[in-house]
Image (tube, rainbow, N blue to C red; front, side, top):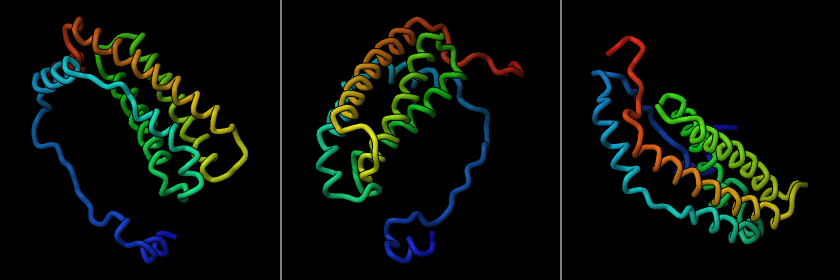
Length: 166
């Protein structure tokens, strides 16, 4: 299957491999400073959810599921929210922030699955229900972002001390 896909569209496949290896200890102070700076300047209305919702039906008529930009964007959002939730487990963020992003990750993943099924023409919820879910997800993202940004301003450290004391 992989060879067939590559043979059909070689320009759409990744080629090569990169290896990453740790050559020094992490720059914890640099990370803290960059994280705080990012949070301090963070402004996002999460309008992408509206764009996905607006194009849901149009993309269903015009593109295969794996080529639909909205569906692909939603899948990337769901994955990134899941990874961010996992990252938060390694920070000093409190339970309200972690819970908010856990909820977002679960909802985004579920919506991604439902939107993909809709795109493929499979039985499932109608477009309006998916759109309402996307609007709700946008609101949750906005609330969680405000919560996170406010908490960053009050945390003495973002990353707890490593277990080995370094």
